[in-house]
Length: 263
Image (tube, rainbow, N blue to C red; front, side, top):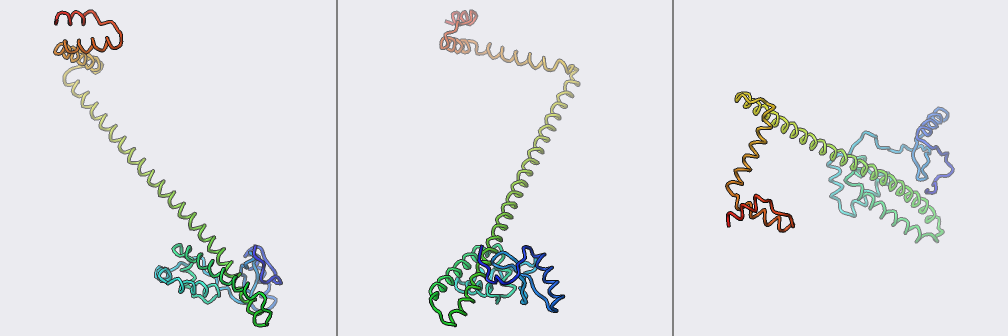
């Protein structure tokens, strides 16, 4: 946790508690106080409005593109101005857009490293001017830390949202595939039913009872096999003799006689 830059101020754990305290203070003192979240993660009250971004506000695409096209130096300056409270609402919204979060995070890290280096370099400077500068520089660094934490949280939410969208897309795709498969199964079932109905109709027209159809098909198959053997009996017998010899099985007598007669 970052050390609080204003430890003398009262602290509140939630924004609701800070708003209630601000309301009571306004009644007692006659001027408004504004809650803000400190780098120490507690809420304080300030006389200065914090220029909070409305929850329903969104970045304009043109502003996001403008910042994306900025050079590295210009973009760092934009980030620094926003951290100092000098950025426009358009820049503040654009920096918090999903398309700029990684770049914003990198720039904040560089700015934080730069100001930390400067503070170390002037640590032994005991002049009044240096003392005053260190107070402002420390406050600025704390703001950069708070921005980095905010950027990190926004990135985590963006990644979670992207994962949810991908999961939803996969589920929608799977549902579409299942619907197509079900439709294909229904179509196949309909075709089989139509074929069976057509066969039943043919049997009815031929005067063949339905219960005999299966037996007739079996008999037709056996007849076809017998005709095939009659037409190619010798060839079939030779193949059968080779397979029996390979397996060490006795050759049927009728096949043996057929081969003997053919010889």
